[in-house]
Every structure is written in C-alpha cells, then in structure tokens.
Image (cartoon, rainbow, N blue to C red; front, side, top):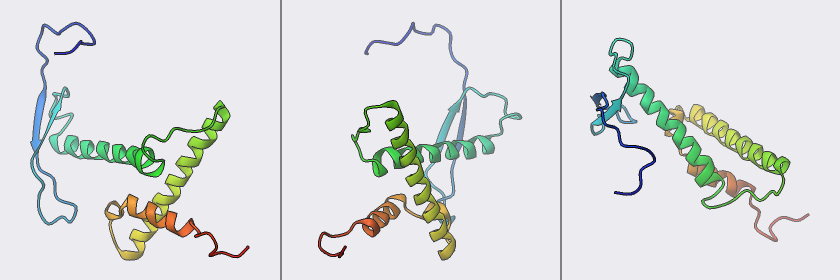
Length: 141
C-alpha cells in the first residue's frame, strides 16, 4: 500500500448501502444494478429513491465538466493567456461557447421531439466546428 494522507481510522465507519436499478435512456428496460454507499443513515430524511435520483444528477454535472475540459477545449490544452485578466477572459469564452452549444442541443431536441439528454454533445460540437470552419480558397473575401 502507498503512503496515506493521514492516520488510519481505528473505529469503524457506519454506512448505508442502497442497491437499485435505473431505467435506460429509452425507458424500455433497466440498467445493471448500482450500489450507493452513503453516510446519510436516516432513511426517512434521505429516502433511497431520492438518493439514487440525486446521485444520477450528480454524475450529469461531471459529464458537463468533461464536455468543457476534454471535448470542447481539448485534452491537455492549457489556457494560453499570461495574465489573470486574460485567463478570466478565456474561461468566460469557454463557458459562453458551452452555453451556446447546450442551447443548440436544447433547440435541436425540441425541434425533433427528443429528450435533450439524448442529444450528443460531441456531435453537436463537431457540427458547430464544421459550420464555422472554412476551407481555404472556398470563400472569396
């Protein structure tokens, strides 16, 4: 085992384990089983269904972070500005582009009668990039 970040616990930690299944995106079947381990022990105050739903929502925000950091900006791409103001400007630009892409996804889903969660971020990003990329020589100034 590697170095620990602190002393080992001597007393056991009491946890609650929630076992559940989720409907698939199409609503036709169920996914494989999940287990959620939590220190929130009061089942009345923290009902299992609510905890499972909130956990799914929590992972949706992780997906959004991945959209911005990995797909939109690009893996291993570092912000290029050298000043705090420039960094702020670049961060805001990335957030505004992400918002615009998400708005496009929402409109696409509404037009096609789809759940917005079913519209691919990476496909939307590729489509947007293709629409603003001009092949040299194909556009006359």
